[in-house]
Length: 61
Image 1 (spheres, rainbow, N blue to C red):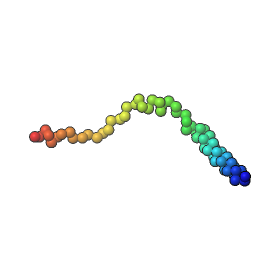
Image 2: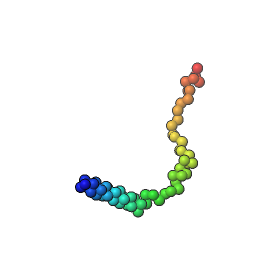
Image 3: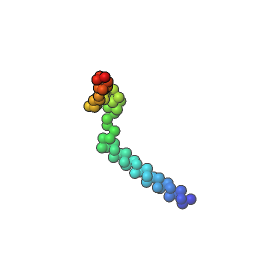
Image 4: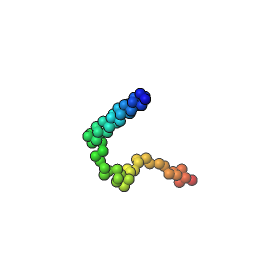
């Protein structure tokens, strides 16, 4: 029966640690931006600067 008390106390300590980390994240502004993720897929990606040679050898034939 004493192992149950030990496991309950350990689980409460772990739960308090996670709750404290969550409160700290909320207070620091971790979850404030709720608009950008919903429209991020609508933004175009920047085109890459790579240019490839397309069939430059076939024009000489």
